[in-house]
Image (tube, rainbow, N blue to C red):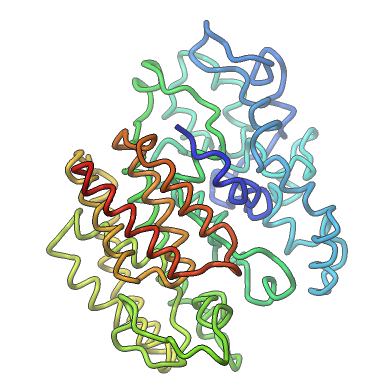
Length: 435
């Protein structure tokens, strides 16, 4: 089952937030353009094929159902023009700050005759410049490994897939959705790999031929690795120039948005959350949504590692109110542990009992009040939904999950007390069902 109506807002955000990866596969080979793939005898068939190893309608799926194809078109909207005007970058369809995030903005010398920025996040933004593999990738004599050697991006590899997605939905050293951009109206970035891949939607068929050529991963494998990789990317960014930027404030997009934006001068209900043991009232903590998920995953993946990760994460959050050098040092320590966990998650085969433990831990952490923070609640819902789907229990608990999605549909209307109450009801239902 694909998460449908509950996640419409996230699906729409894919087009607004998509960022073209600038890996070697993207920039070392010429990009020939989407029209090079869209012929009806290539990937542009109206209906999927039942006689070939691939569907052949991948272009149609992308152009009609995938929000990535609308990424450039969104720059023509009134909202995009207003954001660009506030940032002083001129026409958003020509500004590098916008093109880097809304189209396959490779250098001009890497663009073929049919290449068009108006295609948005097209085939080669993810699959790499096709100059050296377009003519050969249809041949049964050419292996997937051969295509990768000639510039095709290895999206089938879980590690590489995560890095590609994160380059779009978190950022890189070259491009990043800054606090300045968000203040001008750009949406806040959000990422959960398993959910986003389900919403893309997939334009491939996992059949016997696919299994012979490429690895396959369960929803739990994708979710767990994606969360750990996202937390690691955050830690690496905290060690870079966006913290030591020479300005009065470091890059505020690295901190918890809702430390300020969900507060009120009349509210006095501040309390420590899981990672805030050393934090002080009034401090603005590092964004920790993925870190909390990483700790939950570590408890099932590497139980001996989880206490140390929790301790180091708390030290990092406490350092938010300290010198920037302390943030850098603490994030470096956390990153070492996260790299080890990523290595373990990349090869972990999750058993049903493990997945049930993940689900129960995730719900229990929520019922304790941890997800008073909106970012944590947003991640928790997607994780709970994915685990229930993986366990074959989605239909049984669909009403409760739909309620959780509804409670996190609007960050400005988010009421943590209602969210906790709904999680408590889910916990009771899981208990009755013996999950």
